[in-house]
Amino acid sequence: MRQYQEQIYIPCRGRGMYEITLQVRQSLETTPLQCGMLTLFLGHTSCSLMLHENNDMRARHDLENFLSQLVPDGKQSYAHSDEGPDDMPSHIRATLTNTSINIPIRDGKMVLGSWQGIFLYEHRILQQRRRITLHLMGE
Amino acid sequence: MRQYQEQIYIPCRGRGMYEITLQVRQSLETTPLQCGMLTLFLGHTSCSLMLHENNDMRARHDLENFLSQLVPDGKQSYAHSDEGPDDMPSHIRATLTNTSINIPIRDGKMVLGSWQGIFLYEHRILQQRRRITLHLMGE
Amino acid sequence: MRQYQEQIYIPCRGRGMYEITLQVRQSLETTPLQCGMLTLFLGHTSCSLMLHENNDMRARHDLENFLSQLVPDGKQSYAHSDEGPDDMPSHIRATLTNTSINIPIRDGKMVLGSWQGIFLYEHRILQQRRRITLHLMGE
Image 1: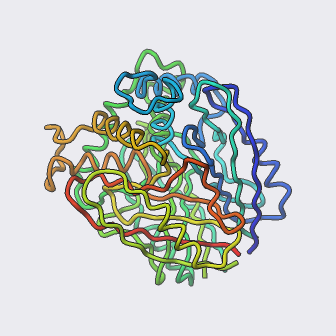
Image 2 (image 1 turned 90 degrees about the vertical axis):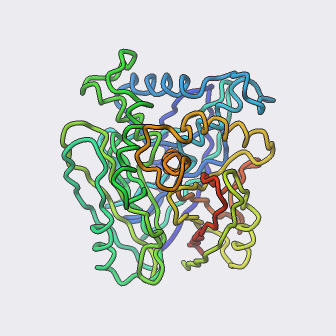
């Protein structure tokens, strides 16, 4: 059993879903692992990591519509708003989704389903640079 | 440290929660692991894996009622609906819950609480066959 | 590659967020791990583990306000209510958040972001004693 760790940085142009499947696949290919576990971790509290339908852009828009209605920006009742109307909603969105994901490795590849893509979901409106730690264990 | 990996297939008769605790326990018992980590992973974007109260069937019905009100099927505003009125709601339900779960192994057993069961939550209305990857690491 | 496992118990005075970052850091420091993966797991279905903004207490209050509106206590429609009006809402809150979290270890430290704290979120109104399993793998 061996392990590998890497940090990658994703530039985000604002709120929305950024597919990173290819970048993660490339990191995996630099290791000799055939079987194991990949963990992706986000060192932030206002964006998310998720697996989501990656074939139809409309699915991403529908998800954004759902979240922006469930957690509206700029509600008067938010006390934590120093960084703007999207500050607290971004923390809530992150809480309702995930900060890390696990994907098993089999035959040297991630066992993703046909339409499963890896996404960084940026919840803040302004542009950000986000740090993801990739951790691989296996043999 | 050693690892084991297996894929199991769960037939689902439509939307609802399917308890898989026993099947997972049986897979664990085929390995000699005494201490370690179990990860379950779902290769799909319209169903979920979760730990939930497994003693009272009413808790499952209450959860389903909650989700079907929070994410109603067939809303006109969904653009991603090629597979029917439950298509996009299933992706949203999956996003609000989890695609994978981790359970530590201790003394050869999962450290589940007394009322914690492992469930595959199918969100699609029609029957499906779902693939779960079980990954075990430890010694 | 080596692994370590420990169980810690957290007394909760009722619903709310309890920061446990320091306790987890202390457990990590008793091991010689420089690189690896930490998993925290909760053996319960009515509380959550999460990473959340740990600098501004108002962010916690805003999150609690959001959840208590999204999943109101004591709704007549809950059939699972033997343990009180907060019984089923606690299971739903746990479902919408997480029972376990993963945090990579790098240079002997958790790779947490500047404002990322580890929280046990108790959803039940009465006091509870909660069990968390800490699992560490690495070298």
